[in-house]
Length: 171
Image (cartoon, rainbow, N blue to C red; front, side, top):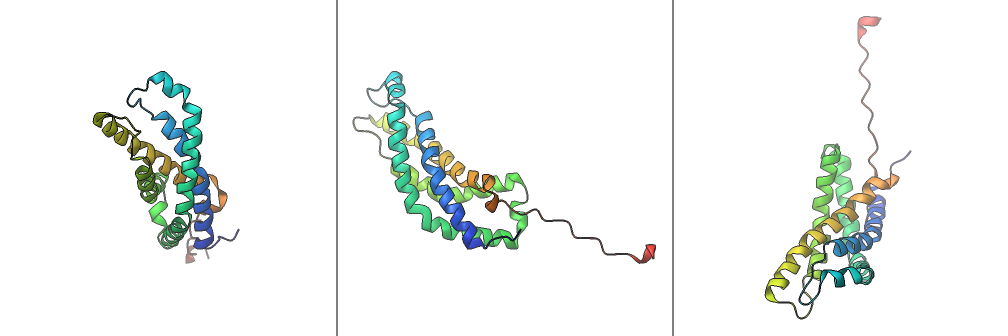
């Protein structure tokens, strides 16, 4: 099977990341929620679905903003990996590459989430910001990594070992 150009693969990866980001962001924000101000844990559980919907909608807005820059970044990365395949020759390196490539999205999402709800004390506001960091990082990391391993067009082609040159011993 013919391998597509890095630009086509980068576009597919970028669109898949944009599609994967809102659900991962919604789940991460719901799981990592903390009570702020006069909220209780029960009110957090009661508002789980509402928080998931609104975070997912906000994630769609952020994902739309990153499609074009990520198309360029992913295409460049795929071109580099095509030239230097050892950069992703193991699943650990693929995870690290996905983490590094997810940092701009995580930073943008964290900036979006940075402002705490109204009525939060300074301690709660700081706690809210600190909890938003891992949520932003995990959701962006998963949104970048999952399409790479789940979509066949984005998987690296397995390179076969070159054939050994024929030696004159058997002739």
